[in-house]
Image (cartoon, rainbow, N blue to C red):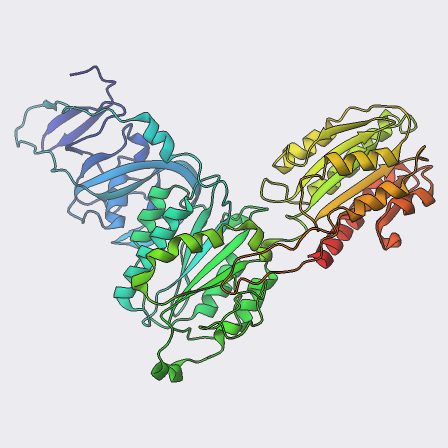
Length: 587
């Protein structure tokens, strides 16, 4: 036997002491006896098969399905229904920690909620035969059977990443009504599992939560409850059929109101997506729910499976329900109807039968991960590129330069900066120009604000026109139209012309071709494509003529002035509102 690092578990069973030595990082092929007090945190080995004693119903348990590591493993096994009150064998698999462990009552045990813990575990039925114990009165030790070394690379792969090209927060609303029935409900679960596998969830990828629609909506798990594929698949597999009416409107409203908050795991700056599955037709009205979803910035995909037969249409309460959800088609491609986000059918997906869902997994996943297509999530706060053009001339001075940086940091803090959200970049100028950092250099708010504050004062002359030209060519050259903003801060007269470079920047990208988004109707959508919107901010001796010459139209709403550097902070909310106003008008 190879050398082991012993973790000694001392147990008193039927009058004798059993001593077990466990090897770290090995897999067990027998069930090891434990007590009701043994916690997940006490186990140093993954994939153990444990033999639980009877009467563990009083053990402390935290969570549901996935349990915090401070929980009793045997209590969790009873709560999950893996073992009964008389005990038995259960397999324990360790998982990373997470937020929002949900409490619930099951199989005679009330588990408790817990906000956060550093590690977790799940329990499942044992596949190995339990270890047989002799009924002697002496003390014995059970030798460890032959071990198979766990490949470290597989563990690393299981605990990392996710699809970084699909960093969405996705709520799945399932149909759990009598309409769908138990058999089709199981097919629906298989479809959701395949969809989840294709999405490739992970800490830096998509997060998935689930709500069941029935008489009343029931949240099964939140966005951050399962951020690893293995635990998410297990949670989907364990979903129970509810029955009742298909109150999809209530479920959409419940999800829109509660699901995407930061307290429930919603990530700032990440697109919010709701996938609503309906078998047949809903029992309630969707109009108010659709309105709430639209106003909340949620991209709602309606996946309609098995439309009502002609003889069933008389049972449908609202025959126009598909007009009132964030979609664009009825069951045919007859007309483009009012949509929450766009009138091109992008948010509608029709599947003829639950038996043909497999071929739809990939195309639906592509839609869910289409960042450019999720227009409901695009707000001014998470979809703009903001460039700061900062006067570093000698007349500003070191102290006032720091006040300018704090002013710009206040603007930056108002936006959701991330690699899928808004971005900021900065250029400092005198007679020369210096790119301080690009739009793609800092992908989170704290890093971007910190980079702003670390900018070193240059000192020199003032050539604002050349600085605008430099910024246009170097900071905004690879960005899309309609969401680029430049804030120019200066305290004096420019030695060169500012009007021509500013006009050229404002026209940049105006002749770009419209973007095409694939949909059931495959319409080409034409959007306004303005170049860079310029806000000019003057301080102290900055001449009003230069400020107005640089600013975009209308000049009055894009030109700002402060007599003192110390008063710049008062302009922050005005500039933020101005950016949001322009973004909304142009998009």
